Image: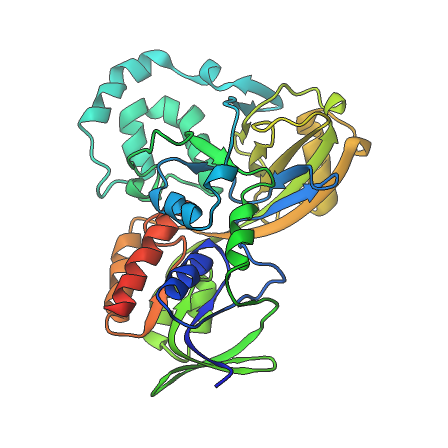
Length: 393
């Protein structure tokens, strides 16, 4: 049947596309259905100036410790296109001033606490609990809490400590961090070229059948032996409400946050800010701003500001950006907007995932995404690997 597939994947972010690539490698007939008009999810590189300048609106850094990603890139023949990133410092916005992070540290407190790094375990500890013990309460309050909030664009103190900065072996033959000449969306482009993907798909209903699943969109009925949900967690809960009500109920217990991102591009001479990796906000209305300065351009600079949801309208966001950067609104050459959703795990997260995995056992259904072991790209690919192995076992 034309609309029958071995596997249908809902969601064309890195998790969904990596799963599709793995299944197709194994000889499966695979279809990816994506709600948005574009594939990529959090991988979203905007380009301007005849494609010579790009700006990341979501995922912005990949590392040589991402072994599964490097393997995928090798299969996609992307390794020789990798581009290094200049090592720059972050600045912290304290009040209305951008300051060097070391200027805010309490060094005596660090010296009296840092030895605990070698004896403390992250297991069953929150980010706040663990890092207060490592750096001291004042350092955590004044510096590290804001830095961790910026990393995951949400309050980080109650997140399980073992979900943040997971230690992995590095491939030292590869540059420590990297991107591509057109940004990280180059990975998505390469996957898209090899896969069958339908974008702009509104999924109306999913039914469990004797042969697998029936997926109803606005204009088509699809059949699949196996189903993979690669959407944000609460979207997965909604989609699975009829076919897997118990799994849906568990997923609904998970938290989720929205990030309103605004990217700006300016002429170099209009921006007085020294080259930076980014800006970490101390409280306020945005979490961070990530800079494109890590890859130089002869004429342009850009930053992506990640705002807290629902606080500022679009005009107020632009005013805030101009205030932080010390520029006039007329200096902004290009504007980009994107809304991302990220999981908001708490200390009950691992138990919740264990319950979900128990319900998935023996089912022709897989769940992949950034709400399992962590939000890093490698965490997503680790989940893809384990779920594919379970499906074909």
